[in-house]
Image (cartoon, rainbow, N blue to C red; front, top):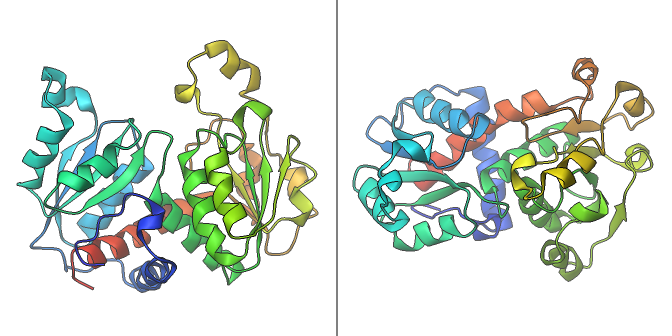
Length: 302
């Protein structure tokens, strides 16, 4: 995995993904280590981010590395008309690895093809978000004790949700049964469902959430993303399609957990936060350990 970019979750084999999770467990036990003191990581966020950007920065800082970059494109020379190609080639000369989020699908793949240093895709439009997938796998493994033979329900924006796309693809390695809950307008794209079909796995599609909760191990909630809609009226019509309340998760499996990639708007009532079945804030913390593992493996420290 040394110097190997991560653009799509498919870039890493099942064995490589499990290796990241194994190293993440070690970092969870000892997260502060001075092993990146000779490395500079560039953080290029052309699109707003809180958890992903700050967890990467936390991961680098806890490992003694240096981080440079920007948190919005308006503060860069792209505002002057500089191409993405020139930006990547320039920043690569200042750093050992680039973490990049960009609203344009395929931008991370393009960057990986021209960059002399590894690229980690921190989200490219509605396409993929592979580091979120790895921390989701880590969270599922921690809460369930396994990744195999689970019932996983995805709820909300399955069309534009890049976290959903990446995680569905990854879970196809583990004999998962998929429960897909969304408005008709936001169904999981056929290209992603093709991965499920190719593995001869089972998926069910629903428009109502309540009927899937009792049979699931993991309930993966997502927000309806305002920024992905060109028609504000369409967004207003379906923005409150699914709201999880505490009473809805009372009669669930013992190991049942609620995940959410965050940010949350109103799709999970705040009273759910007090439930032992709510795991989304711990899930966000897991992102630091997983990204520490990923950085150390790609930079050849582990």
